[in-house]
Amino acid sequence: MKHQILIIGGGNAGLSTASKLLLKNRNLDIAIIEPSDKHYYQPAWTLVGGGTYDIADTVRDEADFIPKGSTWIKDSVASFQPEQNTVTTAGGQVIGYEYLIVCPGIQLNWNQIEGLAETLGKNGVCSNYSFQLAPYTFECLQNLRSGTAIFTAPGTAVKCGGAPQKIMYLAGDYLRRHGLTDQVKVEFCTAGGVIFGIEKYAKTLRKVAERYRVGLHFKHDLIRVDGEKKQATFKVTAPDGAVSEVTKPFDMLHVTPPQSAPDFVQNSPLANENGWVDVDKFTLQHKKYPNVFSLGDASGMPNSKTGAAVRKQAPVLVDNLLALMAGKTPIAQYNGYSSCPIVTAYGKLMLAEFDYDNKPTETFPFDQSQERWSMWVLKRYVLPWLYWNRILQGTL
Image (cartoon, rainbow, N blue to C red):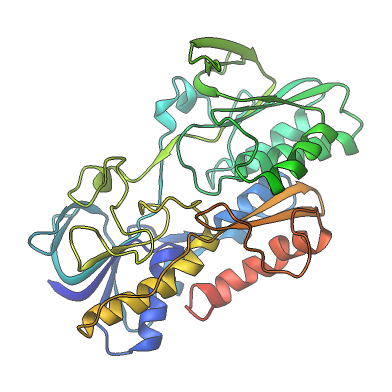
């Protein structure tokens, strides 16, 4: 079996890119390898965890979004053979291609935190990074009457870098509205060294954290969870580089798991030294195999891994792939744009937008570092509609 263009992954990146390619040329022979029956709108899981979105509204049938005119191969990838222009699937198929687009998304490595897998979804240990678990986050929040709520962020790249904080601010607002701010201590334990990488937005977030009396603990990387004892252990790196361990008690623990490219990408000839697909950060073309492109969370571009980034990457990839197919040099460039809509309260949101240089690149004609109700409306109502009705169809 061989296809002109083979796309690995039927998520946001794979479907929107396939749709855009077919809008440009209906005669393209495109196949999409995707094992899942279901397609998820993951950005709303934060709102599910905060009790303000129905989890059922975040899932639809994958079949409804496979672009007409493309072939769906319902399988997963086991390995790449770029020298032969083939991919081997878990089901044993060897599929050939002329051009390859790699966008299988990101892998959640729950097992890298000792004891976590055994206690997820019970003992007050929750995570919005899973369809099954997100509703339990709100259950934990509703059950909080006293004690400590800890929110973690790992040292790896994660999808939507703001998500570990968004749910914390919703929790802070929930506690405030229920008169529990004095009874429940909120702590943010992050392996990172700052609250946000861009000062314009970090300034606002420090004020938000202060409003909810959040204890900020930097260079705290979650390594172990004891659900029965309700204890979380962190590896702490001091400013002088000294490493120690600290164990904290919790009543609620929201975990953002360490993340990486999928194993089949990390272990392939397509990966860079960090395991991501080794592409030019501007053209999205592979550095070694010119007929291979990548976008989305599995790509090695040093941008934030968000759906907003995919929306800007897809047109660049499409233009460059079509140029290559026509015998021309790919010249379209992606500037590293990403967007992070950070929920700061029920009905309030700060929309951070920036590029590779961490320079704010804002869409609206006002200061986006301010918390706004209008931006909440954008996230809660406008973006989900655009996702299902425009983005996946390649028209936005």
